[in-house]
Amino acid sequence: MTLATEQPAPTLEQILARISDIRPLLEQNAAQGEADRRVAEESIAALTDVGAFKVAQPRRYGGYGLPVRAMLDVSAAVGEADGGTAWVVALSNVCAWLAGLFSVQAQDDIWGATPDAKVSGVLAPTAETTKVDGGYRVTGRWYYNSGSWHADWAGLGIPLTDERGEVVDQGMALLPRTDLGFEDTWFVAGMRSSGSNCLIADDVFVPEHRVMSVPPAIGGQYANGEPEEDLFRAALVPVLTLVLAGPQLGLGRKALQLVKEKAARKPVSYTTYATQADSVAFQLQLAEAAMRIDTAHLHAYRAADDIDTASATGTYPGVEARARTRADTGWAVENITRAIDVLLSAHGAGSFAEVNPLQRIWRDSAVAARHAIVLPAVNYEIYGKALLGREDQITPLV
Image: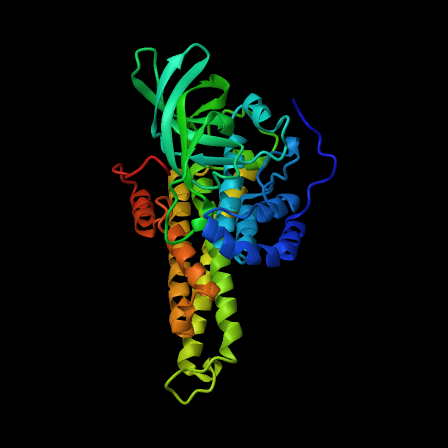
């Protein structure tokens, strides 16, 4: 089944302008989303209307199939309004991209009748499988499934077994949300509205066409055959890693904006400075934070451009280039984390008032920065080993 797009896809600039128009709504709903531990449905509907979830969906289903850099920019723009909402946008988009690597039949299952269907995902194979005629029977639990409240489908890691029950491979399976149970488990200090709960399968049948082997995919061998769009030739692990920097870029930009805006009116307590803007110490802190935020953007964009250029030219980046993307992501996230810390100190104790959005930015960024695949020290080690050509790499996810 193929669907023609009735209207030409909007440009990235048009999507960003639409997000800017609804930013007041997203900001207004941020506190409620945090309290409910899920993005407000009003915000999800508004983001759906402006096309924020179609950035990486295949064009044959009405998606936009924009480059990886666009995924960063869209989630960053949402992140300026709310971190948890941005995280859901980022994860939904990258999981739509992931689904676009599966067979066309699997893609038809998701979007053929429901072009606005959203996909969530967890790569870890925390399940048991039994090989049966035509596919697998799957039982498992997948935690930290971001956007779980809003997803229609889920891409979930599974072990692939043979007829004797022995694990012979690692795979990803696409399951409709209606086949999955749900447990509300996301009780955290930050990114509360991301709704990263647990999805549960109890002896669910998954046909073979909705299963993809992960090891070949890491090397660029996908199940989608010869894709019509460059985006669906992009390198697997670099994309899955880098997109998590997008919300952080928006959080950093928003923190800088808030602190700058207050500087002309807020005094430096217990000093002779009538405003923070008069203080050289404050000026230095502000400059450092701004430079760190710029550094984060430069590295994230460098990595995105590397991925997009390779996919556009039909080449698959080597191990060292892919490892550098993990390092770029860690470096970007580390600089955002440090920039926000500097801004909190510069702004003062008022940063932590419940009415101040800075405290939510701080908590959201801090939690997101600890996602396993973006941890700076781990990613630097992966890159360092790749630079040295060592064989003792710590993960196959490069």
